Image (cartoon, rainbow over all chains, first blue to last red; front, side, top):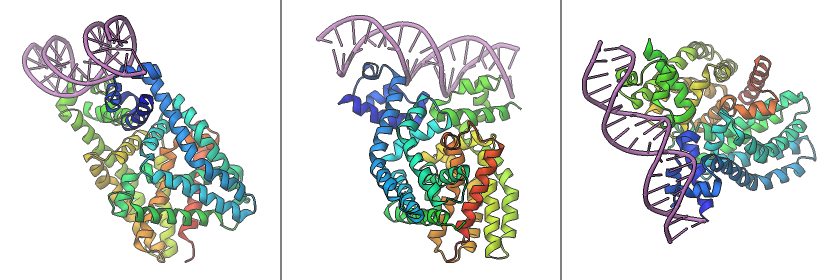
Length: 205
Length: 205
DNA sequence: GTCTATACTACGATAGAC
DNA sequence: GTCTATCGTAGTATAGAC
């Protein structure tokens, strides 16, 4: 399937060089096909870009779906159960940020965060919305003392701890003194993230 | 000073489109000068890129310098004082992430985080190193129960909460239901960030 | 110092062979 | 469906006028 290879290559190249910076010639060459295949399959550069966003949303939804569904049911029991379910969602998200396969996706998404286009809409509706809604519901149950806007602020800041594992990868490695996030570093960071989050979520009002 | 205008424009354009995506013709035009001025002042596109990194490091150092110096001395008194000094550093960083002037800088830096070049070295040595060293010293004093690597992991995750205010700006706005981080939203986020960080830093071993 | 003019390369889109 | 060929545009670098 040439169009699949084109999509994966496109996500990588758009993530690296941005929409303007990426070259359809290069994407086609890396996909071992002719440039005009892009016109045929996706209608052009812009069509390829939007298709890439949809593909990312599908992949992320497939990965996060099970953890989200499990957390939604597990978190109904009590305030403590909600906090624990939240830790699972956050850890699942952090794991995705760390795993090498997410590199191209994360870069693509981060670009859209800065200058949102139609692709951001597709990404948000396709993958972020369900994650955030589940997260906010659980967070409100874990911290019933907080107002709605405070719960929202707390939640997005908690996500920030996971996001820096991608967005600030070079700095993370510098601080830890490693050249990449290997298994021991991953375990350390995830454990500390859980500890931080648990501390915040279980604070007595 | 044409070279100054060129630098500011370059940071903006490189941040938006990346090194390959940005055009020296466009940078020159937006700076109201000829493209060959870039060759004259910076030797070419790459020289301009490195000079832009140096300029960012200088600006950030100038902004964060006072808060860092104040925190270093204030944090020596006790464990609680170290935690409070840390909150000041983190809040100063968060404020910088939120203020509109940091937008171009942050985009430039985030690109370098993904694929570090020589410019990342200059950025790290020029601005991040002193911030991180101060932060780690204070964090170690605030949490003497943690091992060195745990302190480092905790610190970088704390920074993540501030960084998402830039790196995930579009998502932050979505979750809060605003189109930009205005003064009320800024106050809410910074207050919650301080509350989160204080909770983590003052946790009893 | 700053400009114009020019050389050379690479871009995206598209038409048409197979 | 996938290829080659080609068009018009835009990129960087550089030489030389002023």
